[in-house]
Length: 128
Image (cartoon, rainbow, N blue to C red; front, top):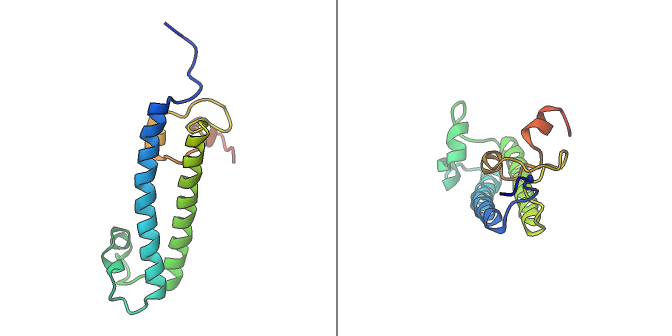
């Protein structure tokens, strides 16, 4: 039995993460397009009002202001870019390796935050 610590995820594991990321990427792009539609379509009669993202935000307001939609769209674009960067790390076989400690980020964390580049320990120690 080999006792050396694993330094990277196997191709099979990377494929699993690739699928998770692609699924999240498709949803993120859809939400981004809905936010962009909310910014350009001010009459409030389009499908963006029924998006799950907007349901959460409707608590205090019936529609999303252009400013709020713009902020959300920017955050969504950053999320999309982070997911795309994660796909590049999968191709380079560096995905899932903590950029601070060099150790593997646990699968549970990557499944929850597939674009993570820090382990919980490194993140909690205040590393930027």
